[in-house]
Image (cartoon, rainbow, N blue to C red; front, side, top):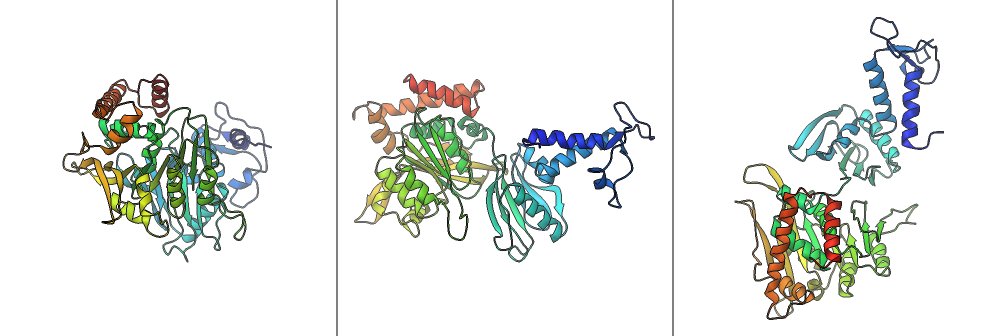
Length: 457
């Protein structure tokens, strides 16, 4: 029996070839056609009466090719969604119920597709087959599924018109086979050279970094891009609901939350995985998204010297702190300054009217004043929406550069501002690499890994 997908494709293609004969359009076998009689199996699929025809079906070459494509697409892959999943320019695929599917395109933003569902039966049948294909069956009793497709894309399914009034719905967040690099983000305008240099220095130095923002603002993309600058010999533990994070580091433990296998039993939560990670002696813990009580454990990890990088849902540093210190996370206010860098990402409207993603603010958390019940932080970078430029507002005033990174690089208190020259040298390096066409995530990792080992950056 065929086991690999390649073997299964060959079986389906062979079945089509054995049960069809290619003609030139007037009934005569064309070049490469066969007149041997075949029966059963695939033939019943084409028979209107349900019984197999007496011989192979006459088709044109184009029709035979179409049959091969449709069978492979629908039986082994993702059906009508397959062309959208194969298009690297598409980021999201959204079915809101009956009607047309919508896509989010990298260049053209939101678009209607030419795929639609006209009846609840058609939509429900497709969703059921989709859920079975990914090994996460959905039912009326358990109508919500979060899962990962075979290519790594994230999918959320809500099944049934009684739960979703416009009909079953699903959303797919496309997976990038090769992660977007920091130089890619420079090309996109999400960051500039100086901001890229700053963030990469923070990641390399083991600073605790949260990337915060609304849905689809580029949080995970930036977090993954920064991972390329974590020292190459580091042991990294990543903890996620659905696997998205990718690093080239050889010593990487990838852990994923698991739902209950039966009623209230067998589930593995982010909270329990994070507690386990603290016993694995990591050099860096990466958390896919902090939502609840695991946030407190993350800050305890920071307190004990384990660097943490994570994503979070908050649109400003003030709201970030408010959510962290409130229920259900409940981080004590005196712990907050264990977080070094709060990056705010956002989907924005650019001055030319086009949509884009930008890092709109980067903040350094300095401390908590109990007497005034207030938090001190320095805004190191700010995005100017009128000019679409990033402003280095922390130039010669960066708490982290001067008080954390400068001592680690051997600068005395008197010479601590030499760190800004290091920052500009790294920014110039990013510019040279971009000019030389070095944009690939893995290539960028190799360049900086070698430079770090040789003490050049």
